[in-house]
Length: 97
Image (cartoon, rainbow, N blue to C red; front, side, top):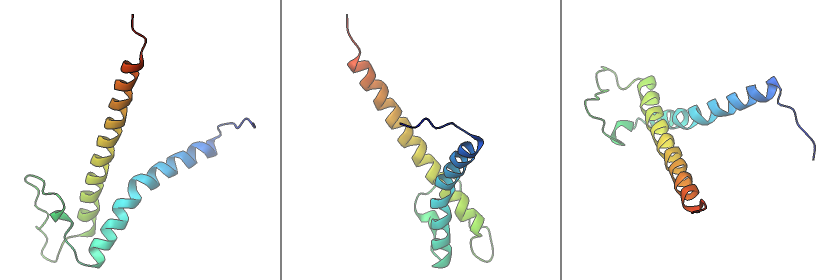
């Protein structure tokens, strides 16, 4: 098996893929919601969050940031769930005695 070296190009590619994964789903969803004039704020109602302060509809950046908050929240919850399950499994499989 060939031994690959971690170069600066690999690090740049890793950061690009992380940004791509983090920003693309909310960006595409916000574009669809703006294209079809839908209300993304009906997905989840946050307490004391009223985006309808604009006179001419909802600006695109508010839609994007709202969906980005939801996306990051879901990802953080899933990673914590996977991490906690791994910790519980490791404790369960640890040798006793």
